[in-house]
Image (cartoon, rainbow, N blue to C red):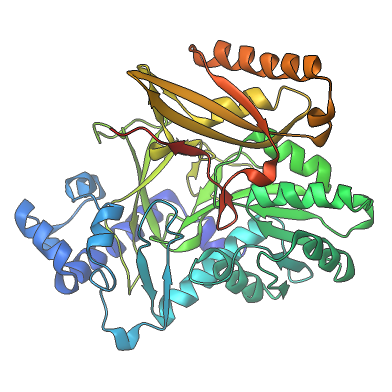
Length: 432
């Protein structure tokens, strides 16, 4: 099932020609209207009018989140403010938020791209969609809202209200599709159990989750606890919001909307291009954004590209599930650690909750890592001996996985920090 079959199943040859034409137009637009890019292009001797090949993409300058922040609020806009009909920001979880703008055409494009993701994930005009992302300056909720209305679905814009109310609305309104972060979806699943509701009595069929990395183990848990088909999607405020990429029902990679976004994978340290299949940092260039185009934006997200055809028939390349962020990579005692490694260990141990937080501190000259693990209430009421054995079992498995000593502390999940519905996975307290 497709939303725009002639576009989603375009031939590679036609797609690459379309990408080149749109890239050429974008380069001219930013050179003429964005002082930041005009200065960068002039410094590198780049003339947008002579850009003739997609292979030359790597010659263009990279754009970082710091570049966008230095242009706060409107310095990166490529159109006059009278043409900007919507202003949104990033969540600001890693510092000052970046400000982005949308023209009327941008909103129309955004709606269509979000509609593609929803349809790929199984949603139709017959569905009742509950959007439990945070509405406001953050772009997640509104992107899906536009897309769901575009395909004719019924939308419940509930945002992030009390979780018990989420469940009550889900019951009463017969919600069939849920959209939120995977972490919040797990909280909803736990609340359904606490309320002694038979999940089979609900009308839920689909869950479209994003805005934070999540593993296959979490997908399996969500599908089992909520009795849904769970799909992943990807977007970021600086590029568009939801609608950049999303899984189809095959669930073997996220189809990138390549007619609107050019993607690269680079080594996050050397910034050299990586071959297909290797994991590195995702770089995105927008091809159709009018108000806020970005050239080679460093997303800091770690993924890889999949070019082999998908059974669904879509011809766009896919990206693997984001495994983490470069700013979540922890270097400790010379060893690189990803939160996903810790998550995989925790899922193997009965009694742990799929919520955790990593604290990194420097004590004297040594770096130390502590894992705060959300655990079921019964653990707190166990005998001291049982509790110690439980903690030691987690610690032993983590040491075997990571290769160095760690501390483990059981906590109630509500004590873990959440920002904009996302669990804050890593807190680095070292003073570098």
